Length: 123
Image (cartoon, rainbow, N blue to C red):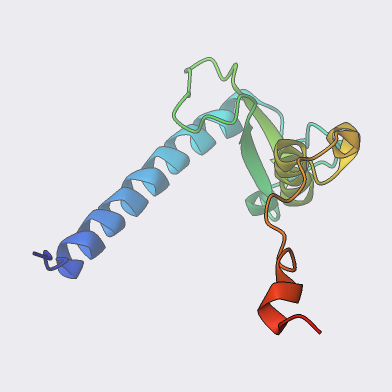
């Protein structure tokens, strides 16, 4: 017995989750912009009202739900440094770059040609 998936309900839940995340984001972003100088914490680029949209809030522990009112889990980063920070995290997590790339990875367990001779017939 297969159950029919209620796509309308899934769409509603997804939209609500997106809205809630945007509201949370606006809240802590506004707080961070009031708490900290408008300077990127990595490249030291300065921002003003004309380009502050390019300044983002980075969660130091990467947990977007950890938003202490004192801002201790936040740092302001320009969009470029913020993207770079998350890319570094991704690369460190999967071992595709950096120090983790030297680790030996497990070999394949499947051998596609293991029994090829018997499949083709003996000559």
